[in-house]
Image 1 (cartoon, rainbow, N blue to C red):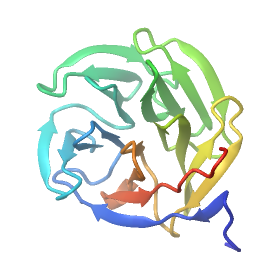
Image 2: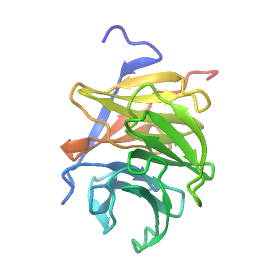
Image 3: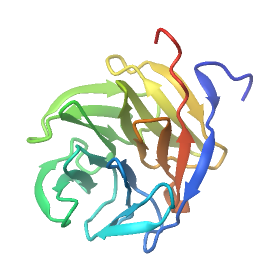
Length: 220
C-alpha cells in the first residue's frame, strides 16, 4: 500500500475479543447499545465491550449477519431473517432473505433493514415486515458486513487475503473511504457502536476486532 490518503488508510485495530465458547468462527456482529452480539453458528452470544466478558447466549441459528432495531435482534439463518426477542431468544417472526441463502451482513437504519448479498456484491434495503426489496446498491467487492452510523453506510469486504471496511454512497454505491485491514485479517460481519468504533467479525479466527472509525472531515 502506498501513501495513505483521506479516502484510503490502514485500519487501526484497537482491541480484539474472543474466541467465544462453542463458536469456531464469527458470522455476524451487532451492538444493542451496551452489549456486542456475535453470531457463532448455533448460538447468538453477547459480551461486554469494556471487559470482553461473555454474559449472554441465545440458542438461535445464526450463520450470517445480525442487526438490532432498538428492541429486537434480527438474524440471518440460511435463506431467512429471524426477528428475535433478545430477552428470551424466542423467534417472533421470519421473512425471506433477499439472497435466498447467499446473504451476508445485516443492519438496521431508519425503519428498514439493509442486507449484504455476498458473492453477488450487492446491498439491499428491504422492508423488515415483508422482506420486499426496496432498492439495491451494487458493490465492486464481495459484501461481508453492513452497518450504518451517523447517516453513513459502511460495509465490510473480504476477498482472498485482502479485507477492507468501506464507506459507500448509499445512493450510488461509490466508494468514499477505505480502511485496509492487515494482511490475512478477515471481515465477517460489521457493526458500529454509534461512536468512534466498528466491531468487525474475524471469520475463522473466532475473534471480533474493534476498529477505530475515522473522523468525518468538515463539509462531508
